[in-house]
Image (cartoon, rainbow, N blue to C red):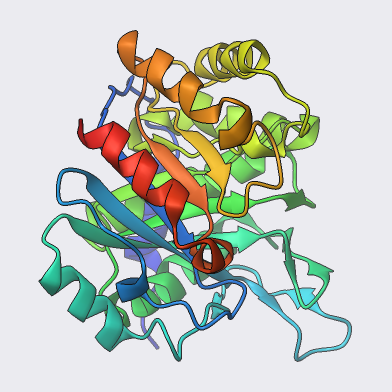
Length: 300
């Protein structure tokens, strides 16, 4: 039987390392893709060669619906994105055709088949061991470059979440399995508690904060969104906090009501670290108009 001692020692070392501050990147664009099974393909999405473009596959989760009741699987991740239209071959092809493209995998998500995806480790060591092993296999099989953390439901305290996720990212980076990592918090208090604990202890290994600004009310104003941005930039101090919108413009401050005015103002103030869209599946019917506008703004 293969010994887990080297991995355990690595985890023990990494969980106690302290964070460093990040820096801005004004040409970063990200697009979540694959969760809604609308047959959207990488090649459908317009890609501006003047931006750093990341697709983020949605999702893989350590959660199974094949057992009763549906339950967490303690770091053993299962693929839930549309692998028919977004396969390993498709990933290779889009990266070969576009040198500015990388592809990441988002972990967790809100629900699987209507069941909340819970972050529920048995122990820190068991979760990290299982997650590092299962994700290394998925990432290497699919030629992926990074991970995104999008847990939204928790049956573990913020400190446990921080240690598990922080150690996982450090291990995957140390082993050259991934080159970048992002987190995707939003304004709900328990979500913020968990992600701010992660940021406080492991911000040095988190490259982007994909904050879900579209989770705020649909009557959000330009001034309110600017204030929300300043608030979250303080909460994730030193991080690359991205602006965000939905592809179908149904939530948060929409483009019709001033979203891109906010982005332009932030760019003028040299605060626009990037933009992401949730998601290509919902953007497809509208011709990806917001993706085009966002990338043109970032590249200009």
